[in-house]
Image 1 (cartoon, rainbow, N blue to C red):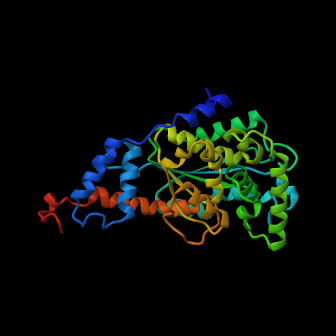
Image 2 (image 1 turned 180 degrees about the horizontal axis):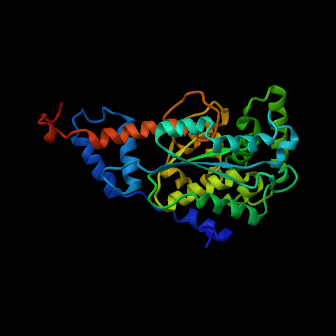
Image 3 (image 1 turned 30 degrees about the vertical axis):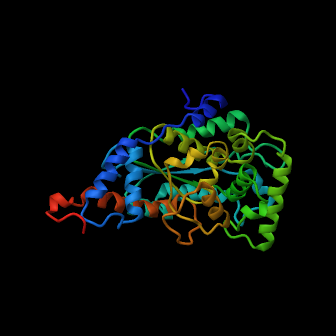
Length: 338
């Protein structure tokens, strides 16, 4: 049976999200207090270790089964001239991922992450959301379920990534609809639009928001009307990870925008998430601030694919290495209180 067999099933999943294991977190904090270092001296590395302990339900969390999934989809709104590249590039980049030639391939290899790619009906773009919902109800449910199917119990970390020409337009529209603000506050250059292109993109989003103004502002309806298949799939994967208590390392603007409609209704959706980085896409900074998530890295990246989060996974590895491999004061024969 599909994970989200109906809209009601999806709504129920986000209304009843499990919490972290407080006992495991307390044990991890206690271990941190006994390690051969001044309390708090490893800063956020200590916080990451405790966070991972809570979601994995163990005092000593691990990163042996980390998975990046790149979801790919095409958007009908690209006919409005919102991207510097044609939609054919989505197909070409999926082939590049599968051949091992993209940045995410190299970065996942460096970080010790498994990489999987899921292309979602690339030959059938979503509808132009300025004049119709992007997806039918069944199409959106199928995308959510496709994402959820990429997550299973026993994963130590999930890194969602994406590829889809035009998807920064969809991401900005989702954020404006779900969280408010003017379209221009959420819009950036994406893959490299010039100022005229950015202005055109803003106009397209304003038209979409006007068309869907009276639509129900539920997470599902917002995703269905203004998202894309790859964006809905990321949302499904992140919700499924929460159901299975798999911690998530978020990537850039599009990845985070995938859960903006859910966050608007259920802010706790971000509790099992770390922000891998803050991208150069302007809306990402505002979105992370709304989520209350501080990024692990700020490197000026704006590639997508899960690339920033894959780099940040190495920080998570460092946090767990220190937490698990350092000696305690008793083991090292060092006087406590140094």
